[in-house]
Length: 351
Image (cartoon, rainbow, N blue to C red; front, top):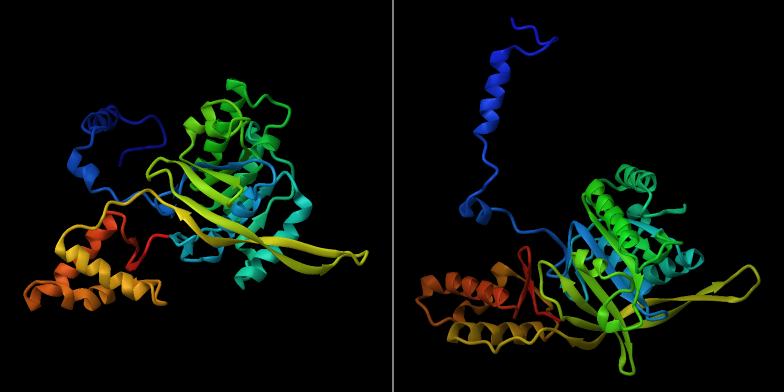
């Protein structure tokens, strides 16, 4: 038997080298096309891994939008603003407004009739994105409590790099590198909560390396017509979607001095603006879309794909034995064109 406690024999070393030389680092197009779809947290907007940013001016409601999103992810809700989402546990790092967290959690739970329990963990220490020890400690504790694939929210980016110049390329580069390292360690998404710059059209405040490095960014906007959030960047999706919301106030009792306590929760408004869709064309698609619109507009917001195919099959101009198959393929085509949204085996209309 070969003794492996000391240096490896020359023939084994040479065999290992030959093996390494025979492994190509190239992959064919066929192999790439066989890769699974990139997993998402918010379909077409936010990936499961990477770095995202939600930003807006003071008092715009960005923290409420952030909390509404992450609490929806943690609670296992199937949709957020009618967009399919995937569940994920959340670690929330509040570096501003720590005192208001309890009230906001209570308001969200009451508004959504959902208890979060231990699916959301609140970090209770200081934290810096340019400190490797802080990053490693946060990642280790998040993984131990929530597992890999969790979402980590840093609220706010400015406080996570306090004392440094946000407009400096080196300083912002260090913060971005820290967020990317954190994402890599937990194998999940890091959301940075940040402020708008003086010119909101130029994106989040600070050096231009920040928006360039993001996998997704959402701007929270306040207009005379109301509040909204808008997708400014999505590496694997389409930017431009805009969804209106308002803040619903909840009375939460009184404090130790007998003063009333309250907070708000997010409510989607009717207003929304999505990328303009082209008209539905083709006799099969027109027939299927008309039937599904009639069903979904009358209190049935989602349908199982197989059930939808069965319902619309009689409207397909095809031999009876082919109607169900053609109906299903037509529905998939409508998903591909953006006229329907599919999450697993469920379909719904875009908001």
